[in-house]
Length: 143
Image (cartoon, rainbow, N blue to C red; front, side, top):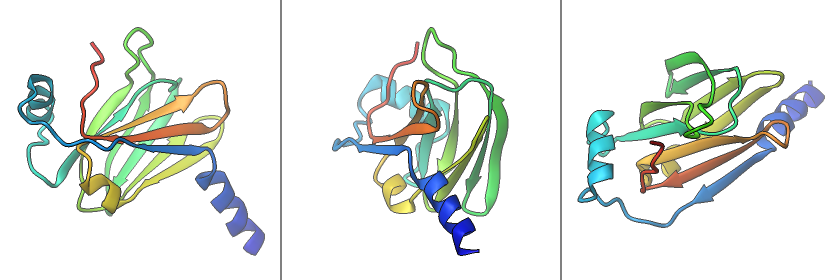
């Protein structure tokens, strides 16, 4: 039993590189205004979770608090480095389940979500099951 728990912990906690941008949200920026309004994230308790590069035929499930808010197959559009996005309630932690050859669980803590309007998750295609989670208050351009 202990071996099983340790295996699950190592499988799901390793291979995640977290990056925290130390910047303030600028709602006077036209791009930021547009994205926040378009994806209904104007309130302080809303953040936007982006899935960017490296997703090839994977299923993503997002659980926000106790509510499953998304389950879909995603594929990165290589020309723009974008796969999908979802507005989340940052008053609760978020679990992201990624299913492909290997299962991956990425947990986003409420404390980190509250400080950032935009969270970007990308997969390193050269390293199996290796992900980058970037917390930011700056919107990236995909178009």
